[in-house]
Length: 243
Image 1 (cartoon, rainbow, N blue to C red):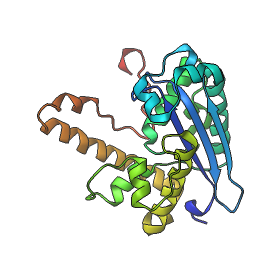
Image 2: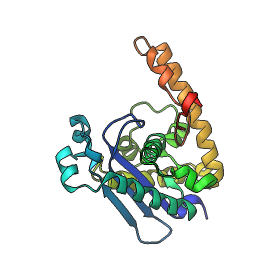
Image 3: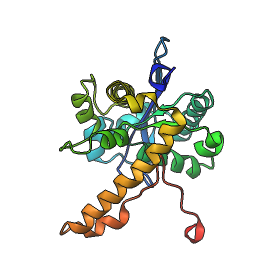
């Protein structure tokens, strides 16, 4: 059995901002699909721990501060629930499919540490296997121009997205895009999870280096080069003293 014909677990967060070091979880979804089993979906809405959801973020995912505070669950409980669910997925040998995993997994890691919880990587050790359609697509189709957001990949791979920028729709769409890529690219579909996970680390680092070089050579964007991170599937936390 190849990885894309087995069970997949789509994971997506909608948040308060674009910086995974400081943004907070607004909604989360983990959807399990495939392997000829019923689809299982778990979703969470948080109260953002008393913080504000900026208007620009609310305009994207549709969740306002008022709605989150009125309907949301305590953010600490949401983080705990997401960590527990992802841990169960990973320890069951199911790959986590996450579009631009570096952002979502880093943000979840920081939320866990913020509340003194054991981060996902410490819970599952070396068992974490991630499928990132963003990284894989950039590797297999390097010359395609234009945006590579999830909505663009769905259009390119003929995948139905549904309610874009809702965590449940995005998580399911990421799984479908990953499946489509595996169908189109035999080397991706036939690779073992361990090999594909390792390859994505290499590809993500190469892509980051290319982006940093692009910024460095673009007038007015030189300052952005230093902020490009190459680590994948998440950015390690900075310890005291920079370690």
